[in-house]
Image (cartoon, rainbow over all chains, first blue to last red; front, side):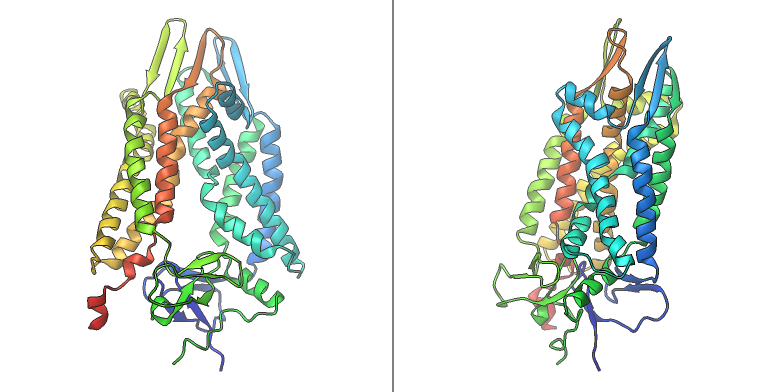
Length: 213
Length: 209
């Protein structure tokens, strides 16, 4: 009988993969790190949630984000105003970091999810599936929209004392998008996608006969 | 069974198990057949890189705290805020929750992260054989919380975006924010370059038993 194995990236332990019938998570027997989650329906959910997030992202960047009024004077900010102002003040490092972590990386991730899981949903393994999945994982730590939301909340509390804050359309779209993306991230597990990519290239996934003595 | 002891390695990107060439040599690398990444048995020069980046983080942390995060320019003059003066301002005005958030994200998290990384590095270098699971949990914690330090950077950015009323009031980012950003980036890179598998590696003495 063929036996399938998993390796743990955290502690290097190789363990046997038990046959999974019901959805659930499989943990490393040595360190308890979650190796993968078996959850039918993940592909559909990831595709749907990221399509919704893409729509909300477009709304977020195209409408006013926050307005602020002091003594009859008002200023209005869109999603990219902070970047533009920092860039104008020649704070290039701050500007680039802000743009990368709140716009470029999240946009790339949403697009890659759609380009990868759209075809997978229709039963096709798209070309460049492996590099796409690899990029998704590599840029993940640098997407910080959830942190940005906390930053917005703190700023609102800070500014309320100075003047009047009026939340714009895109603030609501942004908050909804964060919830959707957080849910998508919590159910995402690349393991079964890697196995599908393997099978599409005619390879058997994670079969190591040589492990056995 | 450990992959290394079986002449195998685990791809960090896609978790494919693969054969690694020539045991007992330092730089053991192979190309993952599935995701085409270069797979090392252990991250190369992990300890040195993590030390270097952690020390860089400590150095940047000093100006990040001493220099102002932002300047508030009004007709009356310019007021500058450092991280600590911002926290004190929130506490004094009774916004304890926000004060606590900023204190945790900007002061507690970076310091704890640097201390944990140093403790992990020392324990791995000394081949400390105990508390492996606890140390691994600490490592996972540093990976998880590091990004939340960015909150203060975002607050400064949003203030710069919204408070622009020409000569009346305007807010500019200070040099402290740049150094604080560097602390966050450098400590995130340090956590990434640390190889948690080193925690689990058995010393020659242990393997004999």
